[in-house]
Image (cartoon, rainbow, N blue to C red; front, side, top):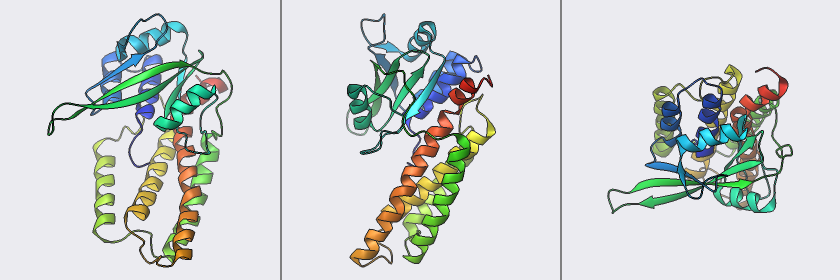
Length: 262
């Protein structure tokens, strides 16, 4: 949850490119990030994998108007609309991008290549058919912001009572890393996103940090089986809510399109 999903970068910067707010080179640079290269396989009209620049141009020519994010987890097909083959691939990858305007979706497959000490990451996005139906369980930005604030308050109260809200060097290092990341790149989303989407995504990332610290920092004061279970029960709905908020933030561009704001 703490790390930015590749599907989020592809959707956000792909949307900015589709809107004419960034150049193809800038969009691809932002999408690839620290990876070595991204390619798209299975694109209509192409016999093999193609680069992101060509792929995004082809998607626009096919009629794609925007890109949505899906962040599914077992028992929670968040952002998906089928068919089963696409959903299964997306669940395995724990993320996907769904096109708005054309019944296509993209699922990443990540490879590591290179010798030990010089390993780099390559990503292949598999382009597949999807159903043109509303995505599952995606809230509006307003709903996501309210739910996230409530979930964070409730979880903080429970975790504090169990003494697992996060303390010690592991927690401090995680907080420092988050702050450094936040200060490094204030463009949490690509150009063209509403300020509320940025605010919701930042809050979802902070909640993700709390969850990561709570899980990684041992059992804290939750030493009994019942207390450990209580912690897990407290974290699970918060993690779900944070994922829903992330998806709502990334999908705000398309949400505005559908409301006729753009």
